[in-house]
Length: 102
Image (cartoon, rainbow, N blue to C red; front, side, top):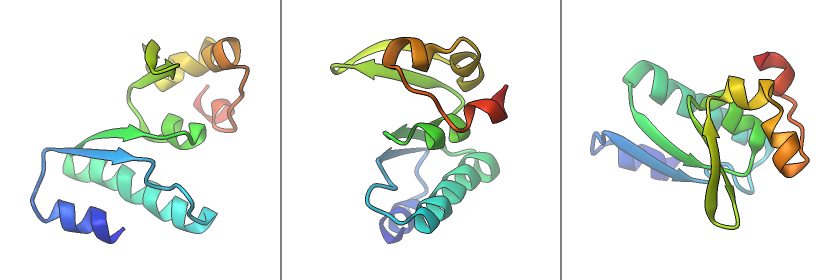
């Protein structure tokens, strides 16, 4: 959280975040997710989020890029990815958020 705050002092136009909630408690991860959403919505900050937490990605992103073996295999909106069951078809995974998006 401190690192993100320090970076924001430079007033960036793009924020690159690589697994910002890794190894955090559920409560701390939720605080970070809310902060990311606020930065995006209230300040119009563009954010590139690399994250393995599927539910966090689906709820925070306007665009999702799915990767396999280091290559982008698909890209779409979170709604379309969920509606078309792309995650289950491609990776065999389901999301808790998926029911909320449909």
